[in-house]
Amino acid sequence: MIFPQAIGVIFLINLWALSYPHTISTFSKKAFASTKFKLLGIAVFIAMISLFAALAHYKDLVFIMNIYFIAQFIHYIRQNYGISRSYLHNNKAMDLQINGFLFFIFLFTQKSLTFFQFKIWTYPIETPILYIYFFHLSFVIYRKILLITYDKKNILSFENIQYLLFTLFVFDKVSFEVVWIGINMIHNLQYLVLVNLQDHKSKFLFFYIPIFLISFVLFKSADFINENFHFTLSVSFILVIALNFCHYFFDSFLWKRKYRSID
Image (cartoon, rainbow, N blue to C red; front, top):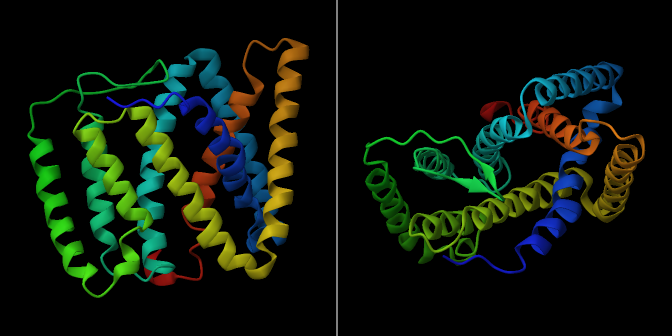
């Protein structure tokens, strides 16, 4: 199995350059100019901080990470579908959603699964999900081969890279860490480049730099508090998870408000 030596470096670059700005950028949406959404944002953030602080106290970080993985994967699948329909005008977006759900089932029916030593919940079953997955993937590949004849720009699309990562994992050629980070990078780029670029047009660079700096200061401040005041709970970890779940909540409807047909 391939496990790049640079995976830790790639993970950190993705985290700071893509993941954190992507999450924080949720609150840059035009809806948050209204008092209603500002108050809602504060209320949801406080609720998430309280929830995950309580879970960290009464459960453990492994429990929270498993909740995160399940929510994040559902979030990936929904965004891929929504972006394909709204921004890429891809009428075959359901292929990606079906394939994502099949891969999700395949992952969580493994005998064992870990992510950087975190034990992931799995429920091994004898269902031939692998064969169902390959049947659907074969159908998608067949249709894409037909599409290549008149739409060559789709060959290196985000969704095709995702199919490739899934398949390499199924064949035991890459680790789960590589697949997850790869999908996360694709997901972050989709959101930053397609959604935010669409919203901010030529001002995108001026939008991205402040968001990056805000992310950096926010999480570094959390680390400073954690290190100097000796909290039992990791302040930065709780902050990251809480912001992610705020993002899942608002992203489920906010950026698609003008696309009523797919809400």
